[in-house]
Amino acid sequence: MWFRRRVPKPASTACSRPLRCWPNSPPNTAPSSCGPITCPPAKQRFPSLPMSLLSFLEQLGAADASAAPTARRGAMAQLGRTAAAALPAVLLTAATATPALAQRTGTVLDALQLALRVEWLQDEFYGQVLGATGLVPAAIQPDFTLIRAQQRQHIALLESYIRTSGGIVETRPRYDFTGSRGGASATRFPDVLTNTDTMLAVAQALEDLSTRVYTGQVALVASNNDLMDMVVRMFAVEGRHAAHLRQLRRQRGATVKHWISGTDNGGPLPPNTAGFYAGEDRVEQRVGALIERNVPSLLPATIGLTEADKLAAATEAFDEPLTAAAAAALIGLFAF
Image (cartoon, rainbow, N blue to C red; front, side):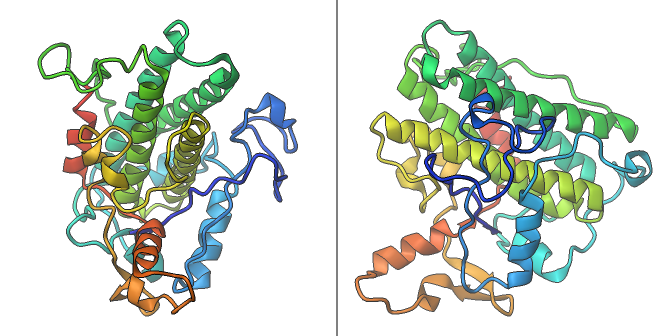
């Protein structure tokens, strides 16, 4: 599990922290020059989580990944050989609390390569949709341009970390966002590059995928403070992207929350997006004393709060990680 951090602040509400167009503009840059996703999201608070963890995540999420991590060469010397060491007990348990889903084996290099694959996927997607005439409405083209710029900055950081440590960056694959893998498979999203609503639905699924990928890999970078800082900040950025894509779909009439609720009824385009949300209906979590508990049973008996409401709240409060194998399979729907 991972405490969910993707609730967007309404556009009409001023940020309580300085605005920043990630990563190079000065604080309090005019929002009009940043696009509508510059304001960090309001944080959902789950009452059973220790406040030390909430404070830690708040500090990490307040700014995006640094363009110049410190002591990178020395910190990454063991990149390809070192599996995750222990995080502080609360954070590591939160990152790996789901035995059936959380990845527990691998190296730091494995984690960074997987994160790079999903960032490549998103970069290519936004590049193709921005290049398709009339697909992205003019009013939201700045949004997509900014999102893509942030994906490319993530790519630059990840590739730099891998190369600096002596690792080899994999060859970037080809992509087919219809899901047919260049005609080798059945088409899943035939009008993704011609229909704005289909495009936004696929964009949402890809952003939700990236959030779950980072959640699943965070334990592998826990032994390195610089990497942990970078990965959790990237995770926060991807969460903001996901919430914003959902808001854009809401503006076009889609019935969708700003965050994942259960399995999201199979995602925006079921059944073809169902795999992106498998496992998100988990209600057993480690809370309080880090004991596995049924979260709905811990919620107060509030007047008007039904059992269905409690179940939804329990699934919405946590991000569920993907294993590397599950993430690779979903990326493989488009990459070949």
